[in-house]
Image (tube, rainbow, N blue to C red; front, side, top):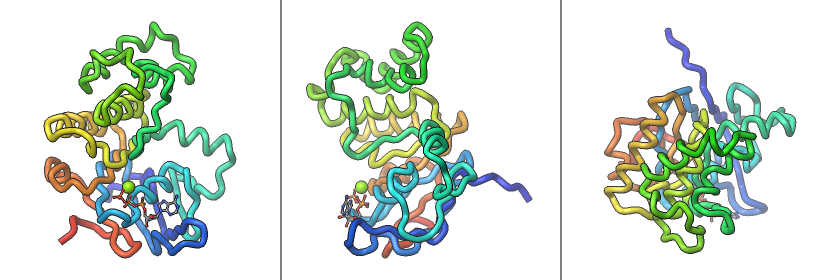
Amino acid sequence: MSTTPDLVNFERVAIRYGRGPEVLTDATLDLPQGSFTFLTGPSGAGKSTLLKLCYLSLIPSRGHIRMFGRDSALLTNPERQAIKRRIGVILQDFHLIEHLSVYENVALPLRVSGQSRSSYNADVVELLQWVGLGHRMDALPPTLSGGEKQRCAIARAVISKPDLLIADEPTGNVDPIIGKRLLRLFAEMNRMGATVLIATHDMHLINELDARVLRIENGRVLKGKPE
Ligand SMILES: Nc1ncnc2c1ncn2[C@@H]1O[C@H](COP(=O)(O)OP(=O)(O)OP(=O)(O)O)[C@@H](O)[C@H]1O
Ligand SMILES: [Mg+2]
């Protein structure tokens, strides 16, 4: 029997915000290394919350989360930072740095990891052209459309070739043609070895690929598309 190690493993995870109701009540899931998974469910079901747990920006109130084979509750701060560096994240509200150009936003992960501009310049330019931002490289984020910001955030998340790519509604602001192009980018990252998790309620997007589908229902994670 082949045993693909899981990159992410949730065991009976629950989470609530403050004293609010539990958003996830009993969530168990695994992301095998190299898998491509869509996460769906109605608005408010807890998709973004589950992704935040996956990229270690929230801590569960019950249950266990293993990341890259490690119990996330036992990580030291440096270990936690090291794991975060292996994760590319595309958030629903982009989180671009407003005073840096599109080019500088995308190059930032490489710059902070100590790489020189001459070593990454061609890659950054090629990726920006691929996502259709070649003509907007010098623009500042506040001057971009929603879809342009989204593509900039996607380029920044994939430029450092993360082992785990997490995207929250990555095609929510673009037209279907660009949406399909971005999906091809995620599929290409997956082909090169990245484990991909995409939260979306866009069934057209989900139907584009023959990938795993998980859904959140009543605080639990179930397999397959909604009925
Ligand atoms: N920071 C927060 N503080 C309090 N409650 C929150 C917070 N973030 C999310 N929630 C609540 O948690 C629940 C799940 O929210 P979440 O954003 O995970 O849903 P979602 O499935 O991503 O929805 P959408 O499809 O609209 O993006 C919602 O009821 C929401 O109001
Ligand atoms: Mg959400």
